[in-house]
Image (cartoon, rainbow, N blue to C red; front, side, top):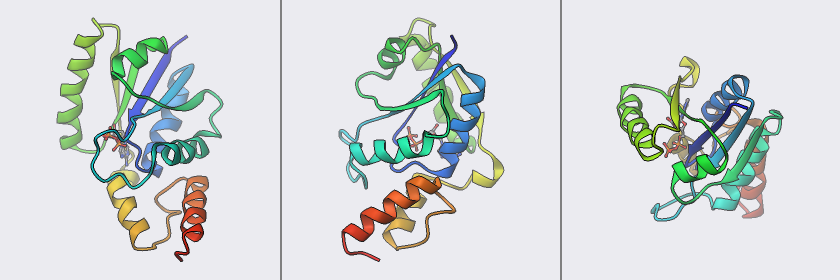
Length: 165
Ligand code: ADP
């Protein structure tokens, strides 16, 4: 079994993340999307439970993908899942520089057990980030272009519950 973990903040999941998940699901037998809990992050928009609900709604269509809240050391989590691979998406050279360092750290900490696989972002999603989607949410913009449809519907429902438009 080839098992991969795709970790991230996912605050919230975007259509760019979902594209990486779709591509990853074809490469591996089993994929765990691991949501890093907010912890010390200063201004998260969504709670851990909301991020998980949005992610679960976004991976429903992929039978070999499961979303979970991570926590603790990523390498420990991945090894507990019997994963051999970590997956990350790369949009540009800034992402690449960060991921190159992280990949070396993960390999070192796991004594070579975890290999990082970097997938290059689709050009049409390269400019999409959670930061951008949070801005769209703040200013009441349509989200369907930026988030997986089911996740966009959930956010819309939560906004209406709060009496926002
Ligand atoms: P983190 O805080 O761990 O970087 P993010 O939720 O921002 O978490 O991103 C998770 C992963 O998805 C990272 O590897 C990031 O580079 C990648 N990613 C983010 N946006 C996109 C996108 N539009 N296309 C492809 N990959 C992306």
